[in-house]
Image 1 (tube, rainbow, N blue to C red):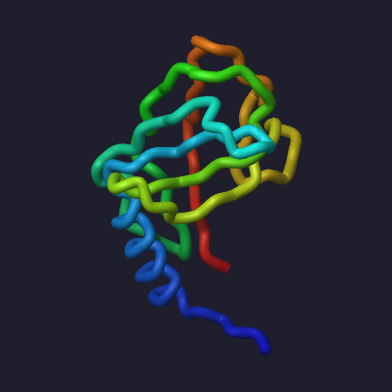
Image 2 (image 1 turned 45 degrees about the horizontal axis):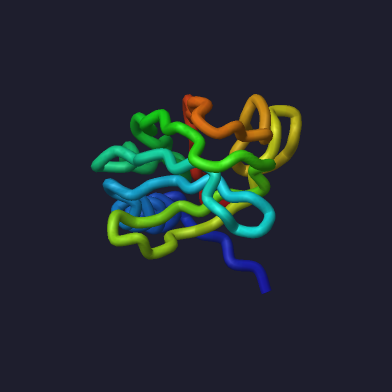
Length: 120
């Protein structure tokens, strides 16, 4: 069975998800789930959804606390509860989050310049 959401329904769902992320963070994780770097989200975390997608507001740069290969990310609410997790890769990948390099070095700055989330 296939469900096709209207744009209004997609926007409503995305705005609810964005509200859960207000003041939360994005954790960049190694394959074994260790947090290599944590990037703080704004409050509010995102602009209002339009056209079935939203763009995150400014994401604060963070410093890597562990060295390793980032494999996936976890977006968490301000209370630490998980909102969603996604794959992570280099800019030439088809991953949800794309970085210049996935190799993280301790103390190195880590940042995401932009991030959009869309509903099909």
